[in-house]
Figure 1 (cartoon, one colour):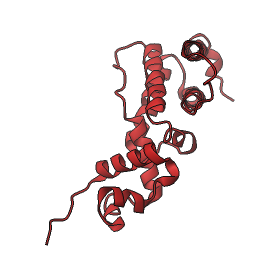
Figure 2 (tube, rainbow, N blue to C red):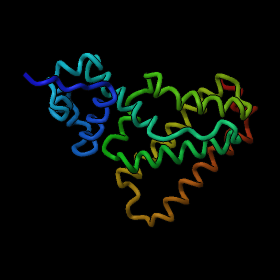
Figure 3 (cartoon, helix red, strand yellow):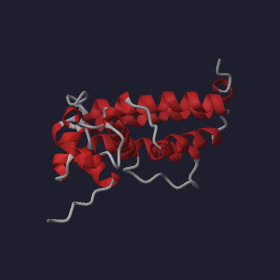
Figure 4 (cartoon, rainbow, N blue to C red):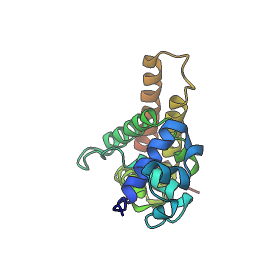
Length: 188
């Protein structure tokens, strides 16, 4: 009798990400991931509770696929570098990236990026409520741009125009946070 194949959560998420990259998010099922790993679907349940947990893991995988900028950088540089890394992630995983627009970051690993952004916003002078609101608005804006670009929404434009649009968007976000923290701190 042969030895059972050893899998872990990382292998499961790698297989799910590869499957989604190749065939789209609809192709990600417990059965399809198990088949890709050459195990029974029941073997997955030792490492992930269900398909929802698997999708949460994919959110985590996307949000942890890049290193966070050095904590010693100025807050605006940290936010810009994080936004650029998220945009690059969308380009690498266009079939999976829309998941970030439909699922919250719930795993500890996925929340690391949100917490990193919140810390930069607090450093910029925002109080807790204003930082939370700014994070929601900024992340939705950056994710939306990145998802649109990855899906081909801007394909009729030259890449230089798209890059300049993204730089302008980041400039607006920095301006919003850096020049009007008093206004942002008066969140109703």
